[in-house]
Length: 285
Image 1 (tube, rainbow, N blue to C red):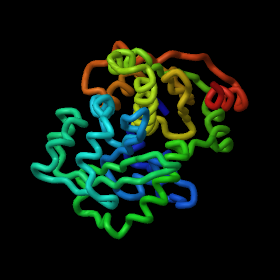
Image 2 (tube, helix red, strand yellow; image 1 turned 90 degrees about the horizontal axis):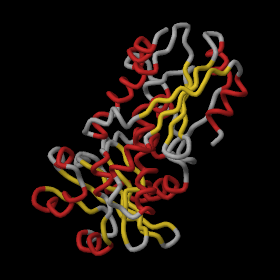
Image 3 (spheres, one colour; image 1 turned 60 degrees about the vertical axis):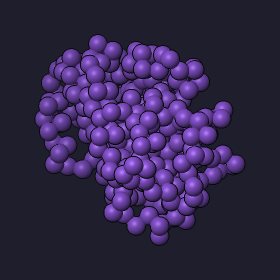
Image 4 (cartoon, rainbow, N blue to C red; image 1 turned 180 degrees about the vertical axis):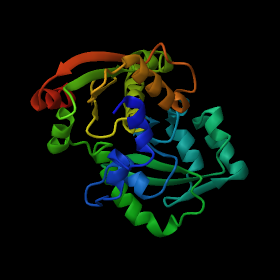
């Protein structure tokens, strides 16, 4: 099955993160699974760092919004009046618009914010356009889950070896590395290196979530180091890395909102004939 066929099949079959969300286990909370289980379409978690706040976790937000998220403690002290849910709509949204890109703030009708703490560190869950949800009845449930969210990785990533073996029945594993280093060097050039690195981590999670849906099993992808995503593909046909790059660029267009095709690099990393080498490629730095 070629790449285009695999991508088209995603619309018909729930796989990867979306499928795992249907089997959400509350005792161990992963950010993207939990957000999907709550039917939230756009949100983020702001965390304190050196007397500032930044977007630690993002769902459905673009790169400009993540870059705009650096904000002062005084800013949050000025808008958060309640230790429970804080609701904003109409003119009360105006101070919050500085956190968002022009495209995203044009689509904001309301914002709901819940403060919470872990180890004396402040956090804020921010949900966009959640006005029809019964948040007030879920304060303690949300806070309990949110504390787990910030402790755990954003993804419940694991390799099911029996599914990987199905891939080797198709072909050897084609290994690739997606590098986004050049994208972030431009986007965060004006920021202190500590915040640039923190926002790059947030961005990588958001990018991985968006593009991982391109690779249905037995294909696999994983977050690597140095702003890289690793992925393996199985195909009886030759795999065109330029075609892969085209589809990845297309899937990330709404995140970057600019032409980054020359800065998103898809790098072939070889062909692996066995399961052990493929697992090592995905899981090791």
